[in-house]
Each structure stands twice: as C-alpha cells, then as structure tokens.
Amino acid sequence: MLWLIIVLISCIVILLTIIFRYRKDIKYISAQIEESQGEYTNIRMNTLDKSLEDLVIKINNIYDLNQQATSKIKHREEELRHSIANMTHDLRTPLTSIMGYLQLIKSANLT
Image (cartoon, rainbow, N blue to C red; front, top):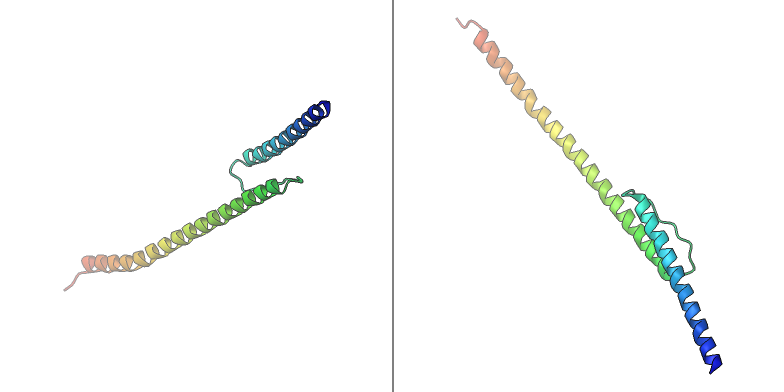
C-alpha cells in the first residue's frame, strides 16, 4: 500500500513538472508574440516537445504568409498609384493643348 502511494505521488510530481514546463514554454511563445507588436519576426523556440515546435513553425508560417500578403498589397497599391498618375498625365496633356488652341483662337484677330 505504501508503494502505491509513493508511486502515485511520484506520478503526480512528474505530471505537475511536465505541466509547468508546458506552461513556461507557452508563456515564452506568448511573450515573443507580444514583443513583436505587429512586426513579422519569427519566433524562436528550443524545446524537446514536438507539438510545441510544430506550433511555433505554424505561427512562423502564418507570419510569413501575412508578410507576403502585405507586401503584395503594398506593391499593387504602388502600381495603382503609378497607373493613375500616368492616366492623369495622359489626360492633361491633350486637354492642355486644346485649351491652348482655344485661347489662341479667342485672342487671335480673325479677319
């Protein structure tokens, strides 16, 4: 009976140790996410647990995908601004010429 109690207590101690280690690792991951503050910095984690490593890899992949999407959006916005600037220039040039001709016609003495 005493052996059973000792085994149970040792199992409880081992399980509590594992739980606290997981909790510490998760807090470390959370702290790195909070420190990034929207920046796309990869999370670093050295642990023996495969599931936590997989979690960190998935978070880093999400960061990478988000960074790529943001980069594409910025690039498309820049292309749109450039296209609008070109269209504006293409529209203004003939209109300026037409306005110049109209002013010339108005100011010229047509006799």
